[in-house]
Length: 414
Image 1 (spheres, rainbow, N blue to C red):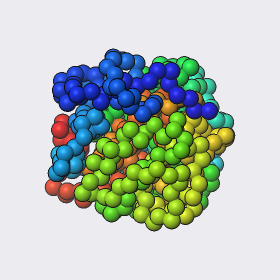
Image 2: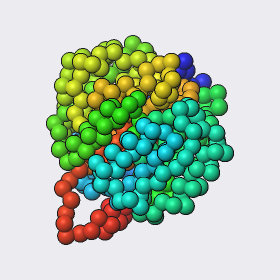
Image 3: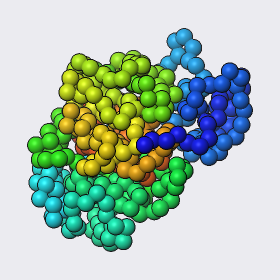
């Protein structure tokens, strides 16, 4: 069962919030309880977001959370330049030949996305189990790292189980290697991701990591539909909507503290609604859907736009095949293209779950799903990312005069 952190978040409703946002290296905001009647000061480093080293998106959005925008305030996206996207040349695909579903899903993805043969690795390990032993994984990752071309920046993992390595998620283990510091102990916080809100467009070249997503599905029909949605999303620039739900489950609705910034991100670009209700019903324009609940009802009544992102904050959504709560695979089966959930008890620390404002801002400015989603989670060690990593509904048409490598290097230096 999802638990609250042992300590409340520091309150930033005091009259000095504007100057601290501009100058202090540490800024935090309340999520556990409503703001107290009398503003309190303090310095809870354990529960703080460090703005030093943050990307521009995070700094700007964090200020939005604690400094209400005045009339006519500009939306954050007006400050961002459109960016090019990663593509097939920079994507590696890992297939487990001992898993028949992995083989057909991987082959279909490779063909649909026109991946270079040299970017595709076929490995062997036992499938069907929820977890892989750390020592077995370390040997697997060493093999993968030795064979992948250096041009590969992100990974697609073509299987559903195992979805974790020890206490870590499979996707984070492939990105950072197995490291217990990415796991919490009795509701503790974990090691932070250097990719969080990063300006990097070349994560392996610049940071030494390859963010990963799982092409997860219960069967090939659902996997094929997911892959087709990802491919169909490219550059469509849809006019969908973002739905941000605060349910009666207060423990799982802590992300409502981030909703004002997410609404500011959407302003002038897409419709966005912050709602206090248990579920969303009968909407056909879902591009983003963020909520907090053990299970989400009404998914069969919704229409998801190709490239849509949806997740629910709860303890075990990332236990893909054997969760006692709703598995995030349900989002994909309902029509979403990407989702996220934790594989072990995380408690309701905001840092361990996607920040709606950051993922929306980066996705709307043209980043791929793997970039935007990964950059929105400060502490992803316990969370698994699923979906098509290359989905990019807001990608710009590729110029023909400049090579992809040149464009990526230019984007990385911005």
